[in-house]
Image (cartoon, rainbow, N blue to C red; front, side):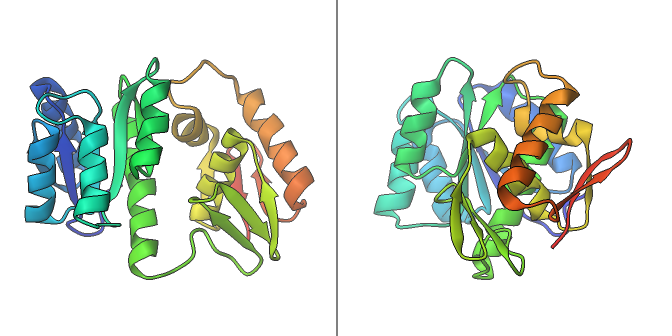
Length: 228
């Protein structure tokens, strides 16, 4: 899927091979990409190019990703762009610290190209809703609130476990679009663990129990779609 406009992404990482890999895959999708090799350069480049999205490593020289994120959010007072950290599976502490510093999401290393593009597309859809002052994933009766990690169903707050929330957020991000099982596994579970397709069915069943039967429709042999 090609980017619909020249959306700008800033990559911040001290490993040149990772920068090259990310830049190649993102530019191939039509994104305008800038790079920086440490957190300080990332802050300076943010001021210069005003990116829509920043993908930033945590452990870097001169200034790490956590401090850079804090500077962008607090000192520069920029609520936009969206910021996603690149973390290894063993860096749970970094994910927590990242969210506390103002990050919006994280992408787990090693990074697969298809998962990268799916994550970036989802993040930039969120950025577009912010710019238009639209509630995230809103329909006539359901609102998916990413900042509070909850769903509003006809005004009633429903707290969901992490994977159930990420699943409904994905489906509700494109009402009417059919998400295949492979797309769902790649976007929601990624490389975190080895799961089977039965895992999706279980999470869908639990969501239907909490939200009702009418919102998530099964497309037999293909996947699932969200209906407003």
